[in-house]
Image: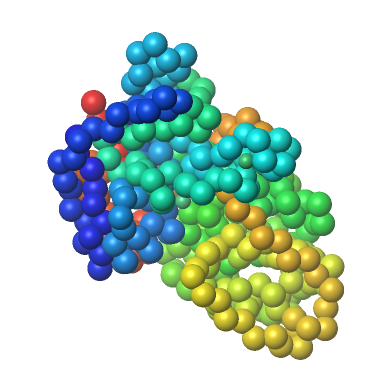
Length: 321
Ligand SMILES: [Zn+2]
Ligand SMILES: [Zn+2]
């Protein structure tokens, strides 16, 4: 089969490699779509030992298996099912999940991927192939962060830092949960205007005294984190969704002299999947706009260049039959 190899410094080559053989407890999935993610830019720059791609949708190709021929998404933590977190239904934070699909083991920028049974999420027939991957990071991850914040804040004025896929997913989820005013900041004008087209109030700069009830930090940048901590109101909540290897924020008076809630959220529990499908159904025309490019494996290298430049929102690898 063909698989993408991330060689580092933004180089991607397509290699002919052996098709994986699914061991017991796993199935072979024929990849149909795999969305690009901001977090893929790290392997793209550094090079990666396995095939990346962690927002995977495909068709189970495993005769004899109960899901053979079924359309499925891939839940990336390879969870154990026995630790306290798994027993509590919090599979995304399984303490024994040492492997994430597309990170520590091969992912979806390939024609086939081997997937553990417990990581298959069947997709309803009315959700088309190209929208299915949005149920993972775009709605799943953003939705989980927003759900956690609802223990603290349920309404009012929200700010989203960063109008990448997670930020825009967060915007649509916030709208779904009834936040009447969502402001979005992004230094990139194209992304800012995109957020406005989805109903956000687009900001060219953030008023640090605006006292937001809720701030979703989706930029993964220190400047975004600093702004989030300063602009949240007392007793408000900051949800940290953006990621980077190192952080540096400065404790200013606006941060120190305030009670507020700081929430970190990672991926999502499987129990939220059904409700996320409903969010996708309800706001389908808006989510539809996020998928702004579909390319075959051979087009992946060029697509990453455009994605890294910030002029694609949520493009995807799309493999036709
Ligand atoms: Zn992702
Ligand atoms: Zn576990």
